[in-house]
Amino acid sequence: MVTSEFAERFAQHWIAAWNAHDLEKILSHYTQDFEMVSPYIVQIAEQASGKLRGKAAVGAYWSLALDKMPHLHFDLINVLVGIDSVVINYHGARGLACEVFYFDDAGLVVRAYAHYA
Image (cartoon, rainbow, N blue to C red; front, side, top):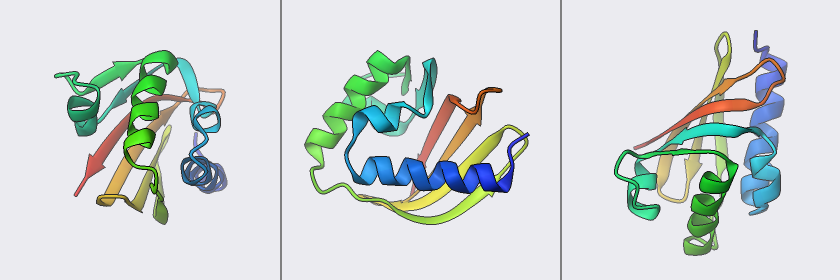
């Protein structure tokens, strides 16, 4: 079960990694074969399903996104806790966003879903 302390620590580390544009630190939160779902995957990675699987595929997508948005910065708004999941609500480069993260027993993300206003 995810605790509020774990969720808050994860959110702070995740936001800091993105704000540092440190792809290695960003990817360190995820399993090797995690699934990422985002409407921006359709636009940036040109993947019609909006889904990518694995660190190599998602890392390449995020690398493109970071290149396209050199001033990318996230401001944490709120962190919500579920049984095996965390929702991070933040203000990003294009406005409000929420990401839902599902964790394995080791505390790594196995699935993530991005939502944008």
